[in-house]
Every structure is written in structure tokens, then in C-alpha cells.
Image (cartoon, rainbow, N blue to C red; front, top):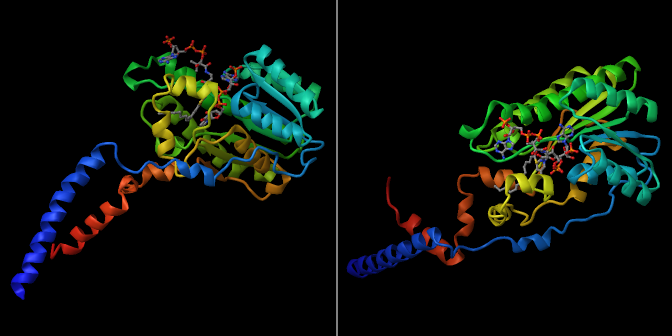
Length: 333
Ligand SMILES: CCCCCCCCC/C=C\C=C\C(=O)SCCNC(=O)CCNC(=O)[C@H](O)C(C)(C)COP(=O)(O)OP(=O)(O)OC[C@H]1O[C@@H](n2cnc3c(N)ncnc32)[C@H](O)[C@@H]1OP(=O)(O)O
Ligand SMILES: NC(=O)C1=CN([C@@H]2O[C@H](COP(=O)(O)OP(=O)(O)OC[C@H]3O[C@@H](n4cnc5c(N)ncnc54)[C@H](OP(=O)(O)O)[C@@H]3O)[C@@H](O)[C@H]2O)C=CC1
């Protein structure tokens, strides 16, 4: 009897050992289960989510509103009734976007040239805005600069360029508008667009990570300080959403896109329309109790990158049977 049991245990151990070798090979090869098909569970919706007219009689300033995510936010706010001002360096692009969106929504979109790195230019931009529309109810600090680069290759000017656009630019716009709004006793919603790696840090985009972390500290601090003036401050951390501006500078060959999608639990990139709906909600009166919030909007990418055991997603059900047998067969420590 004892010999029979020992024999069975020995055979099981042999099966477990040889299967474990196969498992090792598979895990390090490419035969693990691919996730990605789950995207069909999470289809993106494109329509504006809030009731029409939610931003009637509202003025919104969107920095970097001529392209990418800023353009999508402008389109949604405009569709919901806002009069928008979009501001960045390239006036021709801003004007084209402004005309396209205005002609679709019937609401005025103004294009104002402004390099947010220059506090004087920011002040002039706000002068121009006051003349066109009055001070804004909604401010979205969305303008940014970024590129992937090993940190040992960064020049001082490369560091300064990114941190000037992202951190100083956001601070200049926020402080200039904040001071004027306070003087006029006017409330407003401020929203900053950061990234998921503002929290974790990330190699190869170190100036951006450092500056975005600074933006988050700025917005959380002002949420506490300027609530008394009627100002709300919130932050959205987007995960990967295809835009020419981001992808051409962060994955210029497209070599990393598949791996990026594979690690996102919802199996796909986000869309500009999805983040525009979130930005509209956060900036709207429906969110008037929301301040100091940091909203991660990334299809689950951050937690997927963080969890030490998440790679076990590639273990198949058959492999789990083997692993479980091995674990159960372990006696003692
Ligand atoms: C791993 C897979 C990833 C898949 C995709 C995942 C997507 C997730 C995205 C997550 C976060 C995204 C955050 C973003 O912010 S995306 C937004 C990106 N959009 C932009 O950057 C638009 C605006 N950008 C620009 O205008 C330029 O790119 C700029 C360089 C930031 C600024 O332009 P400009 O002021 O004209 O600056 P210069 O060209 O004069 O350069 C200044 C300085 O920087 C050096 N430099 C420029 N490019 C590089 C580079 N690629 N590598 C190293 N250094 C660079 C340049 O040489 C200058 O320095 P120096 O004077 O010393 O030579
Ligand atoms: N797409 C993505 O996957 C992600 C994006 N983000 C963030 O989303 C935001 C939008 O990025 P995205 O739409 O992808 O990229 P874009 O490159 O399209 O947007 C960046 C915008 O910033 C403007 N800008 C750059 N430098 C300046 C400056 N000095 N002064 C004023 N405006 C400036 C650009 O306009 P111009 O050239 O005319 O100045 C451009 O419209 C950024 O804050 C980015 O960090 C965060 C995480 C992920």
C-alpha cells in the first residue's frame, strides 16, 4: 500500500518536473495566452455624455487645444454650448481647428497664439481673452512637450524645454488667470492633464515625469488654498491614447504599441472622445463638489504594470493544474 502511494507520488513528481520545464520554456517563449480580445467588452463611446447645453454661457480656455486630446476636449465643450478659446504656439493650426469645430457646433471658438513658457505672452493671451469673451469659467491646462530619450543624452536645454512647457507653462497660465479671477470674484474650474507616470516616475521621459509630478503638486496645493475663491482644481492622468503629437515622440517606429496594448486590461488604447467626456464632466457644474481629485484614466494600465504577479496572466489553465500540484505537494518550508 505504502509502496503504491510512493510510486504514484514519484510518477506525479516526474510529470510535474517535466511539465515544469515545458512551462518554463513556454513562459519565456511566446506561447502564453495573449489578452487583447477583451477589448470587445469595452467598446469606446463617442457621443457627448452630458446633457446638451451643459456649458451654455460658459467660457473655456484649453491650452494646446489645436491638436490631439485638447482638440477633442474643445470639440466636446463646444458641442455642449461653451464658447472656447484655444491657445498654443502655432496660430495656423489653431485657426483651422477653431473654424472646423465652430462650423460643426455653431458655437464660437477663438484661436489665440501663446507660448506658455513666456509669462508675458501668457499675460497678453489673457488680455486678449478678456477682450474677446471675458474671464473663463473653465481652464484646461493640456499643453505639453515630451520625447523619449535616455537621461544621459539630455542637454540642459532639453530638460529646460520640457519642464518649461509642462510645469512653468501650467503655473504661468494658472497663476495669471487665478489672480485675475480672484480680483473679479469669479469662480472657475481648473483641470490639468498629467500622465500615469507622474505618480510612479518613468525612465526615458524623466523631464516630463518630473514636470508632471510638479503639476500635480501645484494643483493639489491650490485645491486646498483657493477653494475660498470659488476655484476647483482637478487632475486627469491619461494612459495611452493615440495622437500624432504623443506617439510620434514616444514610439516613433510603432515598435512598442503591441506590448503597450497587451498590458492594458481593457485590451485597447483610449480614445480622444472618451477623455473629452471625462474632462467635460470634471469641468462641469455636475462636478461642483469635486476638487483636489486625481483621476487615473488608463484602461487599467497602471495597476497592470504595478502588480508583481500580473505576468501570471500568461499561464494557461493546464499549466495552472501543474503549478497547483507542485504547490500542494510542497511539504514544510
Ligand atoms: C513605450 C511605448 C509607448 C507607446 C505610446 C504611449 C503613449 C503614452 C503617452 C504618455 C504620456 C505623454 C505625455 C506627453 O506629453 S505627449 C505630448 C507630446 N507632444 C509634444 O511634445 C508636442 C510639442 N513638442 C514640441 O514642440 C517639441 O517636440 C519639443 C522638443 C518638446 C519642443 O520644441 P522646441 O521648443 O522647438 O524645442 P527644440 O527643438 O529647440 O529642442 C529644445 C531642446 O531639446 C532637445 N531635443 C529635442 N528633441 C530631442 C530628442 N528627441 N532627444 C533629445 N533631445 C531633444 C534639442 O536638441 C534642444 O536642446 P539643445 O538646444 O541642447 O540642442
Ligand atoms: N496622448 C497620450 O497618450 C497622452 C497624453 N497625455 C497628455 O495629454 C495632453 C495632450 O497631449 P496630446 O494631445 O497627446 O499631444 P499633442 O502634441 O497633440 O498636444 C500638445 C499640445 O501642446 C501644445 N504646446 C506645446 N508646446 C507649447 C507651448 N510652449 N506653448 C503652448 N502650447 C504648447 C501644442 O501646440 P503647438 O505646437 O501649437 O504649441 C499641442 O497642441 C498633454 O498634456 C500630454 O502630456 C498624457 C498621457 C498620455
